[in-house]
Length: 159
Image 1 (cartoon, helix red, strand yellow):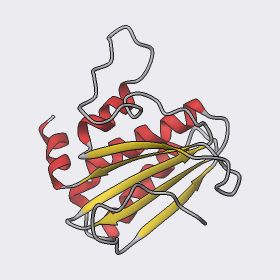
Image 2 (image 1 turned 90 degrees about the vertical axis):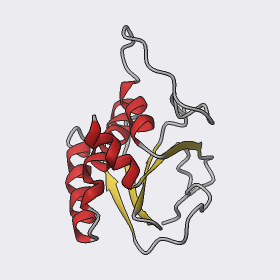
Image 3 (image 1 turned 60 degrees about the horizontal axis):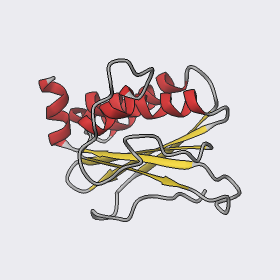
Image 4 (image 1 turned 120 degrees about the horizontal axis):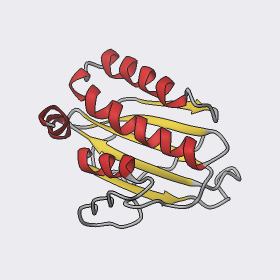
């Protein structure tokens, strides 16, 4: 499987896991269970709360805004950091992932949605989104990603 990721800003990872998720309302829960097992297996349980939050929001976004499958990728980075990436078939990069650099703007109280990805940006150390052309095995769509580390985990614990 070909995977598209942001440029490497850290040393090469020592592990990466890929989970194919069908368009199913259980997908966010399955992603969280898998994530907990991966982090426990690699001794990164300190990232669990933050990683669960951002993973759940990214996978839920893929489920709500597409009709097809999604792919979750968990990748270790240097410094006890984790990159969470979610691919889906919708090429639209949603706010606040469509605007970088700078902090995300809060979602208006009257808005119907958008709070989940705002939470990802608030609790993650870094985030981004990439539209993918149809050349990648004909898939197209987009990849939303975020990185979390010990400092991001502290933000969730303090909330």
